[in-house]
Image (cartoon, rainbow, N blue to C red; front, side, top):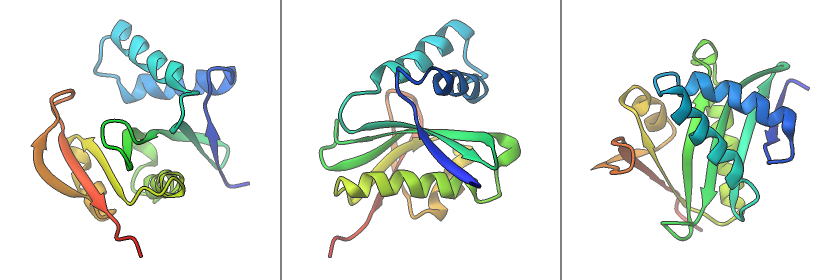
Length: 153
């Protein structure tokens, strides 16, 4: 198989290890102790309803991950909490494939609106997927909020 999406749970030790390794790269500007606590908290949240931590494997290499949630602060919305593709794997369509998987999961829950926060370097990527800037900075991470709405038929 060329690509696979793996669901990380607290009990999938080998996948947790892969996630923690990717997470170190993702959060390389964060102090190690804070980074470890944050990444472990994502793993610990798995098993809650309507929350998924996905590892993306492409051609037998783990290239990224996404942490998504349905509901929460915005009932009936999909939320992409964390999204990462390794730098050397970017601009090859892999981020779009990972995003499509995330959106598919959230649409199965009947979400037609999605939101996320993003750093300035990723705005063009999210805009290419139909997201729009809201002109609001999230207090919890100082990143711009972006939204995408899909009409229901």
